[in-house]
Length: 536
Image 1 (cartoon, one colour):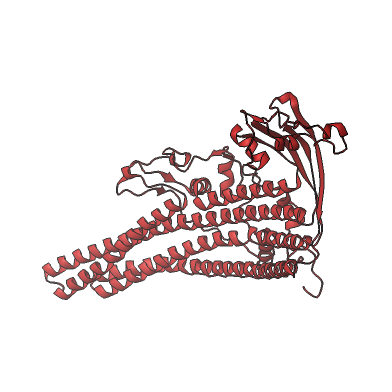
Image 2 (image 1 turned 45 degrees about the horizontal axis):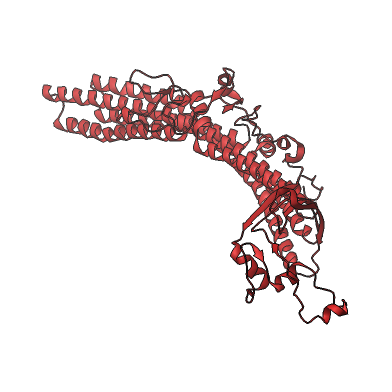
């Protein structure tokens, strides 16, 4: 299946290269596994490629896509109730000739002889033929030897009938609201699909930056270990020269071995973060790679300050979030369900028409059949059902109120998420600004502490303290960079700016989703109607 889509920002450049073919989930060779291989045979991903691969292979996206197709099937099923149904049917029956007379006469055959396929009794004659007139010839009645009238009628042991009937719904109060409700269900599934896309993009960004920051933290920890190793070697040389006591060597060894677990932890976090990203983008485990990582990433931790107006961001989130549009579709669907329940009070009218062909009872020949047309109009109206329909209406109205309450709460949830992401961006931006100068000062302090120690004016403790301060400043700055980019990805998601689509995504986009029906700004209520001045 080909998917044509355009994602704003950094992904837009990748989309211009062409369409992407999504391979099957069980195939051993896929478009997602044809990435550029590194020297160790491990697939290498940039951020753009990781996002595109996730859009093709992420199971949440694939499930959401299938849900849209399922709702399209529901539309076809419900719509069929309003369309004609043509049903041909036929029956064929063969009856043992020994049973034919018994069925006609009720089992009475005594006093007469029966030939194969023939009814020869007076009783049979009275059924097949009209009885003799009671007003007859007087002389015939006075005859001393009257002869009974016996007619030999051979019944066919084969009977069949064929009918072709068509039914058409003329009117009821439930089908049309049900059809409209299925369209809103399809729209809800589509917006759920869009919401899943935005979530996956945000997760891939966060996990990608997590790998980058973990790799950078390994470098920081390695730098610290190397520095402590050099300090230990220096103190050992000084101890052997007799210029420092044994305590200095022990202190340097303790500092070194306290730092090594931090390096091991950083390396493990780096490996785990790669596995998490591989799972999100849908990479299967390859036994041939052994203990090698499932992927490598190529990228840096950017810092691009963005000026954000909180009020505008909240309004943008309300207008663009698929999350809210899905809630709107649920409200509109529930309105139709109320109409379906109310429609049960209205009459139902159906028509049936068609033709029927029935075999002759005495002849199985096709040329000796009875045929004709049938027409029927059937109507019904509920007069008294002991409150069953009223109970359903009451239930559906309560569910409608619940969906409206849920929509209003979802609006507040969007407002909360936007404000949280905005606050996190502010925090991380301030942390980055505060740590940029701090790292430079910590590096200078460490250089001076080492110079003082070499000159005999300082102590080893001063060097160790300066090293700890530098490590803390570097780690804090890296975490702040990661937090800023992660918060920025979340901010783009909650404002609906994570990605914009100009695609039909394999014709998945319903036309109705591009109308004003799903405008979810602050000036409309749960059903899309303008709010009154009091409610604002």
